[in-house]
Length: 216
Image 1 (cartoon, rainbow, N blue to C red):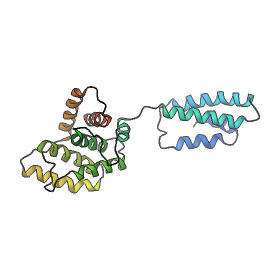
Image 2 (image 1 turned 120 degrees about the vertical axis):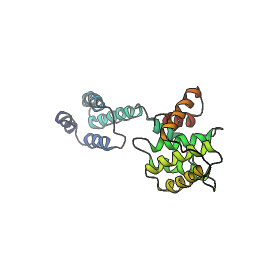
Image 3 (image 1 turned 135 degrees about the vertical axis):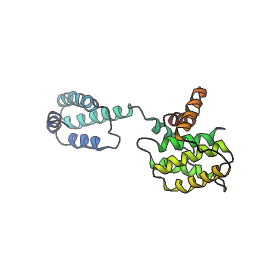
Image 4 (image 1 turned 90 degrees about the vertical axis):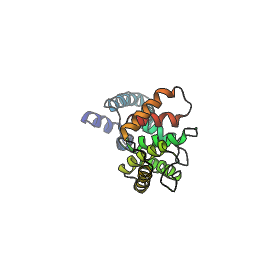
């Protein structure tokens, strides 16, 4: 925060400066470079209006600033990973479609490879994947098993401890059945192919998981 903005906040009186500091320290405060300047430009305008509307200048200015800041945050575009997390169901899965088992592999991979993985969402997603793993380490088919092993490898690399043992069991299943392990590049190619064929879909979990995996 530069000196000019600090001076304006201090002149506004008690209440507005702590509010601005709270905004700056919020986890979602990673915004575009011009965001602060836009908000403060509105704050300056609101301060002039508030002074004209005395005897409640500070309260009015703080209220206007709060509304502007909240509106700006709400208007920020959500990341693909955030949209995917919003699609997650209570049991950790992402889709109720006939392709749900494949969607789960794509979703786990996308969440695990995100720039800032959501550890809670990823953990729940891995739980759902592990519930469907068979005693032999596979998932009832070569293609699905290879995708899920690739997803568990990504989750393990992202720090999900429970994914490691399941990954090893899955890898052993693939080797015992002569099935090649799926790489991240191959999973990405499959997701891109699926995305090209997907078209319009009402299943957001399917859409965002495939989009996320296609960026690996």
